Length: 345
Picture 1 (tube, one colour):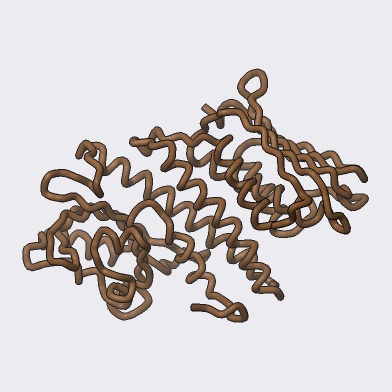
Picture 2: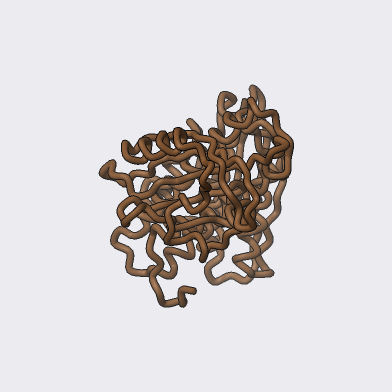
């Protein structure tokens, strides 16, 4: 376990972010001899019966048996050699010797120079009776669902790695930086939990109750802040949005709320932060965060001029095609952003 004074390597931190992902995830490092496993999450341990300690450092072939289809293995080997994505069904064996069909999808993860740093594998276990990880799904829909889930995890891993790189440049306060990054990753973890709570069975059509999601984020951030005199009031309509839209909205809300709790009440023991999510006319969704704190410094043009968090907000709002409004005075600040109808359908 890392001590508080140790600097966690960015790639290690990104791997840890996948620990609570709702599907089995494996990362291998092709830069090491025999492309060994460098990370498995808890779902992998549940599916295969192998612990992290038993899996890390070994090539994934330890799951195979004498009767694993050599043609599928050849396809897999060729895809890894050519650094391309692939989906295969392999007969694998759990630690207790029981066989299962591993529906495996492999994707290369590249760095800023386009070089492959890791291969990510996302897998589902299909038993002989067609049961997939404890839930019966139509076989013809499985690959589509898995492909979408893998796409999401890959995108979010890339997002996390991008944040780590930005945070690390010129950083002199590693502990604080990684603490901030932990909060951003927690927002993504809450999103996966919210998606699970909606019990969406078709990942391509899955939506997220964004009002409930941002409420959970607000409560989590208020709890972390830990000041009983600062109240966070929430008023959120029941609105469902696509998964990727919820991802961006949640991260924007997380950044703005954290800024409010960290900076709005300097020198004060009490205050109020209000979060509202409302559907307006013509299908526009407005998210408003208001505090009664000290206001922003005179001349501030946030988020145009600011730290990494402000850059993240700008980028995410651009991806949402959202419009932003900031009003500040010595009695507080109100930040609102409108998400157009096309993003909420």
